[in-house]
Amino acid sequence: MEHLLYFTDNLNKKNMDTNKTDTWSAGQYTKFENERNRPVTDLLNHIPANTISKAIDIGCGPGNSTELLKARFPNAHVSGIDSSADMIQAAKKRLPNIQFDVVDITQWQDTETYDLIFANAALQWVPDHVDLFPKLIQKLNKGGVLAVQMPDNFEEPTHRLMRTVACEDQWKDKLLNATKRVAREGADWYYANLRDKVTTIDIWRTTYFHPLQGGAKAIIEWLKGTGLRPYLNALNENKQLSFLDKYEEELSKAYHIFDDGTVLLPFPRLFIVAVK
Image 1 (cartoon, rainbow, N blue to C red):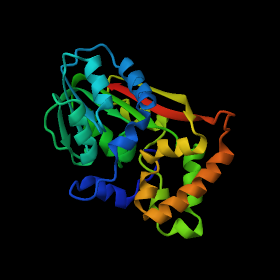
Image 2 (cartoon, rainbow, N blue to C red):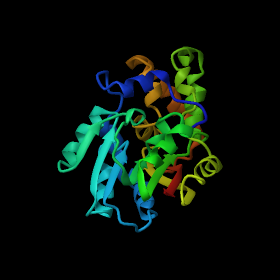
Image 3 (cartoon, rainbow, N blue to C red):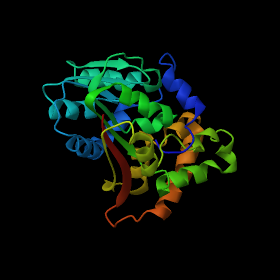
Image 4 (tube, helix red, strand yellow):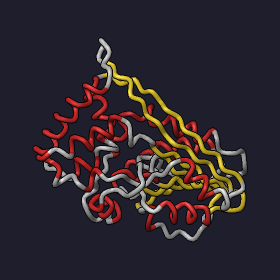
């Protein structure tokens, strides 16, 4: 999730109503699980060594982050929520002893409080951070931790080229909403808006360089599980194929492909650890 405005109304409605077609695929997301787990581990390692008795993974996806969270705090009671039924099904299969529920973060009405609210690569899909972050902090016990990681790649070639291709005549009418920015702000914004609500706040940005085998096609496979979802959801199968062909062509110009077919994908991410 990146942004200053918001993600598509169409995607938002689908994610909030679990009776509609689920737009997220656990299988697609976990194709690059080792790479996606690196920021999870980095975020966990920055959580202060406080006593964590009760933790929740919001936007838990297929449970890979929850599994690492439980390993980091083995004595804590850990649970997870996600708006995608497919993701929750995969999480339950992976971790049958942990409570997982299909809940949209914007509709989360849990009255309980936590020692740790963990959000890995989830809050960028949720609008209104000016209201969201204070509400999450209110759900923390004194000394509790809000730990957040969000992709910070909206201006990377991967995402700029999505928007460029989407603006071409054959797709622009259907993809107008998909090109809008989503819900992430800059580091200074989070610091300014959270510092008087917590005792300490740590914000940093890391760029990971992921070697992917398969050139531009490998980048597309990565993004099919995340950033490309709003674009693909708005197109029928034939339109998807033509869009991806054009997108692959543009990616091949923007990224260096090594002789063995490897491409090095830079992926910047923003981290926030706030202690109440």
